[in-house]
Image (cartoon, rainbow, N blue to C red; front, side, top):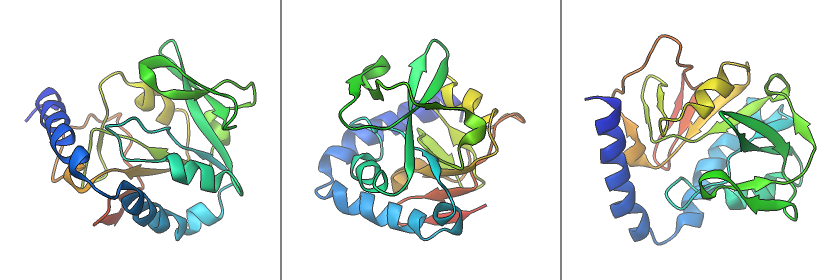
Amino acid sequence: MGKKEIRKIIRELKAAVIPAITDISTLETKVFSGVENLNEFKCSSNILMYHSLQDEFPTTDTINRWAGHKNIYLPKVIGDDLMLLKYEPRFMHTGAYGIAEPDGTDRILPTQIDLIIVPAMAFDTQGNRLGRGKGYYDRLLAKTNAVTIGIGYDFQLLDSIPAAPHDRKMNYIFTPSYSIHL
């Protein structure tokens, strides 16, 4: 199955499954408590997260909780790339694609990030990631050696997805039922 078909299937699953979840907050806590137990998390100072959309695995509560003791950065879409800006709750606006983005000027280079929480349409058990198709994270991940952690719902973890030789595999994948160290 090709990338386009997988994206279509995952979009349909998201539309059917996510609205039926009654306690999203519990799932978020479960997944991110697994992340918090990693030594790589404990040793990280600069963490890149994503501000979740309605159809993505939730991150909002975790961003706010971690911002108390870690430097949390969020991406801001600038043309074809992502600028990494420090998260400050009072300086946020709705940016490209309806995503909440920081307004500040406190930016960081990808090489200065220790750990990245990576969104995706799907992951596979070998650590491959399938994004939405615009390549933002592919370009970003090529510029960093940060530990990468893919997070998602159980239905987003597949046995196999197409991957190119230049695609960067995740170091970890967490869903509510699975934690994979690669």
